[in-house]
Image 1: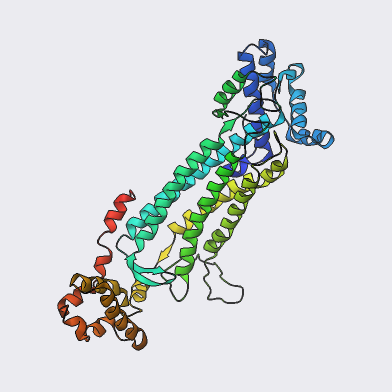
Image 2: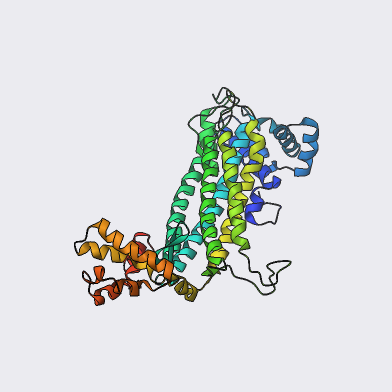
Length: 431
């Protein structure tokens, strides 16, 4: 059936209209299978296949009386089909339709999210290549550690994006399942072959076993993966938020012509997209938590999961897709300031070379403990005096007796921090 809606694809998937379209697709798949097995007569199947349709507004009218959405749907479809509609829903229960149709919606959504993940991976790869030799300050605990390649940040995110692609593919496969097994999942009133054939027609995998519902560990796995995607986007956004701080200013979000940063302060350029992504990632995690709570139901089923899923499934799919789109734009248009990176590298007057010096002393036969003490004592003096670390070391006879001045100057070389970047890129599949 052709959708009557003209909306962005992800939004359309979760409209009531598409929900009913999926229900009808599921009902027709079951009826088709029953016809092929000789259960539904040819003439009746021909009428069903030609006339089956629905009207969303009419369904709402009927549901206002029946207080049951699937019954209202079937009643409305019967108004189009006529007497042969008696074969629709034959031997099925509501959850056979609801859960199998939801699998179609989740599969459709997952494939759109996958497309955005692949787009993000490509953008990150391009940025990694662009900044392969852009030197910046690496930080641990938020404090200067050692120099590194700015491109490695993008390479790291690219590698995690690839893992998210694989995990989402697995999650789609896990959730893209159908059931046509009746009131408590034991096929009391339906041939299991109907399930096998109907799922094949729907491009879904039949579940091995169900109760009245497809088990919710599958849906939880899907939403947990969306939450993991959210944590990646938050990781990217959080890094950009730090790099955009006035005191750092190594990168920032693009700032459009006419854009305003503050109602009070005209100078402001805030990382609003990054902050938004960090906030929205919390929603994906909270929805995943709700999905985990849905797995344990009473006996063969209750409906405590249903009201939750009406919110968390569409919201998480739409949100993850939106966040990926926003992140793609954020990274593509990121402003990068290598000159500020260089200035920040030199903020500590060469202290970033302390480990290189330590290791050279160890190579000269000094114990690690003694070498550490020698380097740290000089580093602490530099912290207090602001004196260049190289000058401090060259004035320490305990060190110059072990290392010639020329060798010491060679130690203070930024190129050492880029020499194995290509090796890492090859591992990540970027070169």
